[in-house]
Image 1 (cartoon, rainbow, N blue to C red):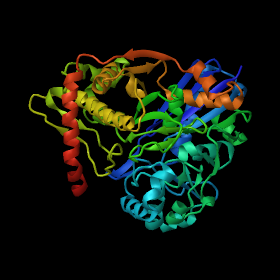
Image 2: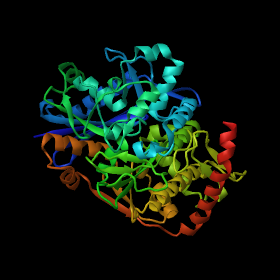
Image 3: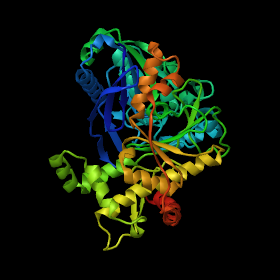
Image 4: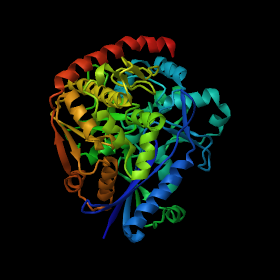
Length: 504
C-alpha cells in the first residue's frame, strides 16, 4: 500500500500527518516552539528548530501508524510564508530566521515603496510595501548586518530550507514565494527590478519549480534522520494558506475558506489575478497549478487567544493538565456565560500590527469599554468577537471585487470552538461550514503528494477522496446585536489608526 506524508511548518508549531491513499488519516503529531522576541518589533527563531521538529513529528506519525517506511512514497512540505533564512555556501544558517511577524524593517519598506513605484500590485499582488515582506528583511540585513549579507549564499523561505535539507536541492515555487515582493505573479519568475533595488541577484535565490512538483528524493542522510527511505519523493506544497485551501476543497470559483490559526487568513479561489480594481486585496499564487487566491491576512487571531491563555489562563491551563482536556475549551465555557457583545467590551486584535483590509504595522491591540463589571469571560469573548469582526471586514473587501460569498468553510485550530464558530456566523450573517479534519494544510499536502506519486490523477480527484464536510452553522438570533457591535468596532479601529501611526 502507498502512504502519503504531509508536513506543515507553522508560525509556532510543526505538524505532520500520515494518510492512506483512500484519505484516511492514520496519525498526526505536533511539536510547538517558542518564538524569540526581545522587543515588540523583533521576532526570530533558530532555523534548525524547524528541522528538528520536522524529524520528530515525522518519526512520530510513522511510528504511531506502524507502517513500513518503504511504503511512504510521497512527502509534501508546506510552510508559513515570508520568514526569511540566510544560508552560507555550505547551506548553514548565518543567523536566526527573521519570522514573518518581525517588523524591524519599516524604514527599508518605505525605501522600497518609493523605488519600486506604483506597479507593485500589478507585478506581485501585494497591496502595500510593509516590513513583513522578505525583500524588506533582506534589505535590513544588508544595511544593518553587512558582514552577514556579505557571507550570504542563499536567501530561502522555511519550505525551501527544509526541502533542501531533505533532497539536497535549492528549489521553491510561486505559491510560497509570491509574497517575497520580488516574485512576479504574472510571469511566474523573479522580478528583476525588485532584486536590483534590494541588491541581490537570482543566483542568491532557489530555482523556481511549479507548485506540486517533485523536488527530488530523500538523500540517504535525510532519510536516516527522518526514519524514512530514499524511495520517498519530496513534493513542493506551497504556502500554508494556499495548500490549506486545497484541503478545504477550495479549488474553484465561489468557494470561500478561512483559517483561524495563529493568524487569520481568508482564501477565495480566482482565475484571474487582477480583478480587484481597488488594489486592496492581496493576491497569492494558489497551490493549484495556474490558479490564484485572494488571501487577506491578519497577523494575530488564534495567537491573540493563545496570548490571553498564556498570560491570564493559568487556572484553566492547570486544570486542563489535571483533567486531560483543553485550556481553550475551559476558557470557552467562561465566554459562554457572557452575553453577545461582551457588555460593551470591544477588542482590536492587532497585537503585531494590522495587514488587511488596511495595512498599519504600527497598530496595537486594544480592549475598550471595560468596567468593574467585566471579568475574564468578557475578555475571552471579546477576543473571539474581535477576530470575527476583523474577518467580516475582509469578507466585505473580497465581495467588493465581485466574488460572491454564500458560505464560508472554517478551518484551523479556531474552528474547533463551537462558540467561536457561532459568533463568526452571527457576525458575518452567513453560514459557516466545518470539516471532518480541520488540518487542511496537511490534507492539501497529502493530496499534492498523491498527485505527484500517481495515487490521484489530479488535485480535483484528490479533493473528492480526502475532503469531507462536517457541520453547517447558521446565523442565529444575535445577528442584530452583532451588527451594532461591528459598527462600534469599525469606528474604534478607524479612530485609532492615526493615533497608532503617530505614537508607535
